[in-house]
Image (cartoon, rainbow, N blue to C red; front, side):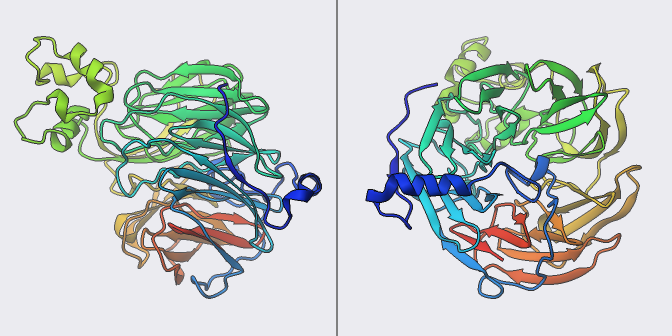
Length: 488
């Protein structure tokens, strides 16, 4: 655990500084541990997208209709989380200033706002933001990741920074930028950083930030899948989707328990788990022969001569370049480029898949635990994660195309049916109160009936770009547009 940076802390707006101690004590009494009905991490309980206890939810709303409150924020695409009577969210409040907010659930008042200087930020590819990692909370603290600062813990009551665990700056061949989110399991904060240079899975002590275990993932390429927990075979496994492989780990030690080698090159979606079964949908551009080499030649070979120079790649990869340049001619081409940045033991390519995999295995479960596998399906999105509700696996993708499959059998219920809402879908669908909520990048949210057929109930304009997955808690939908948070 490294020395804390000096936060630009702002005291709660409802209390003067001279009464700071009383304010902190009052706030502490209001914060409670995570309970049923909370939405304490990316996509809620175990990243399922399902609200466990939501209450009735509105069908008709907009950026000016049925709004309980709206809070202006800086730029960001991280989702809000809700624990007790607090809403937590992050933003870039300045060009090199990162902010964490504690907001009152009922009134929308900002109770505290803690700002930290980020230092010089690495390049990212739009529409990503440097405030893209969704926080997680155990009720006592809020856990946040920023690429230049690492993992951090903030007191949920008053926002003061408790610890910081410095991490290596992630490196991306395509300059995508960081966007992974932590989770909390028992007394651990777990974080998966799959980048193109030094991928790893990490657990730190939630109280101190001290490393508990760290497991390298050398076969992985850059990806953004959030870890999920799977109870099967008499144990709880930590499951992480990555390039070519879905893996299960012991959450107490980080030891790899099993691997299912059925995934694709680029993984940006998060699995969902139900009754010991892991469901995942992935689209990775190109076919099975499109390994990383061909993506690099398409996007990084600026003069299109079929080979790469060191100048065409981010400087973080210079050492890898030198090792791969066997003939020392200053270029990577042919066989040199095949495995320069992709593991020779994991030369997986592109395509589209929808799969159900039984948890609780041991060793290589590729041939034994795949319950069903839809290969070459046109249903998956490269960004939006699947939603399993009422036994049906629902997907939505670019152009407002949806699909639905039977969770037990994989049988198609419908495929490529429009939900009357064009655009890109970076946010993942969520569900509660017999409804499915899906929002596109233009900020238009479609409300669908949670039914075995496509039934659009409403279309709702939130008035601004939206990439963040909505949150649901206690009869309210929380929608984070690029620079504002709404409670509907």
